[in-house]
Image 1 (cartoon, rainbow, N blue to C red):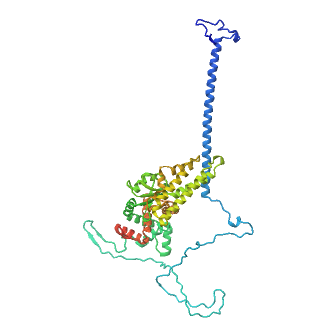
Image 2 (cartoon, rainbow, N blue to C red; image 1 turned 180 degrees about the vertical axis):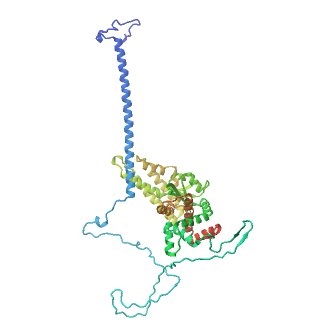
Image 3 (cartoon, rainbow, N blue to C red; image 1 turned 30 degrees about the vertical axis):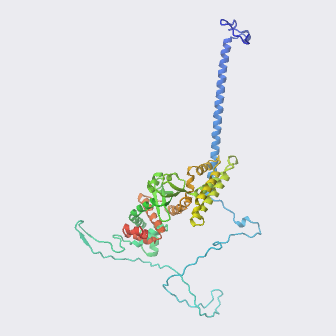
Length: 510
């Protein structure tokens, strides 16, 4: 017999509406109430579960925001410390009383060759100086004559506080086609220009090589040479030089596109209060600047072209990713980034720190320093080029070992993924292609002049100013790298045609 037998199919309880076991309550009503209570209970449990899930999500979000807030605070504090360095106590304040102060000896390191001025190759004037009658040291008048003479050479400049005025008498011809008389320029003459090419080229030189403002340039000419002109005239000199240099500037861009190794970088610029960017591309022989409103891959393409086949030395900025197949990522930038990450991580609260981040940054810094050292030795010949492939394999293994473990600290994890990703091969391009340096210091130094110029001039105000400040600095730096006399080249640029100016820029080379 079953333990819980089912009632017959036609069974009906006599106490269904008034059960004595339920204190006279209706069994149907009790069952319905029980089911309603059960449903309400299950619904309540569901609400509790949903609330608990929402609470866990909110707690996770709060935790993530706290971690992000701590990272931002550490980053801000590191930036503040980098801009405003704390006052360091002098060495005398850090030593005990009575102990001698240990200071580094000033001057060049021991064994460094000294520098002395070379003897002049000519003597323009000789001055006979009589013997002294009183000793300048002890004021004694008991002096004895000596037969030997001493020589002292002194170089000085000659300042003539007047200008050189040249009168040009032109023979005229009458053009029947133009129906007017015509003349031609004489030697060293700029037609219809009251100021000559030497003064104009010197003004451009002072502006773009020495970094003087237009007002200081006019003051210098007025005080030293007695030549008066207004700052607007100096602006006109620059526009004239830039107009004559457009063709050379475009040819310079083509030379950059066909170069074997090119450095590239960019920095900010202001034009009429609007943010712009100065782009640089160059190497040991060439320098090209371009000021543009944007900092995009489209601008990089316009500089390097669609078929750049050389090696580009650059930082990790993504705008350069589509330029060529071979490029060298700047090791110095990665080293600096590792130092910044280490400083930011050290400023985090202890609960947010990842114990492995500090060791990771130290190992990356050490590896980058070793790579830079190998690059210098390869360049100098201290390490033969045949060893480059072995050096690369050894450093790849070290880097893979360093980047094996992930990190909670987001900046460190981002750097780890970059070093361990597909772009890792671009860290060692200098070990595969001769002549490629491991760092982009060349571009940094080239942009330094523009950065100083930006601080002194506060940028430009017009489109013509953007063009001028792209063309003239390109020609000025290229002239310096070609080893020619800059002021004389600027004079040639202003007075001669494009072919002669280009020949002067490249020392008559093709």
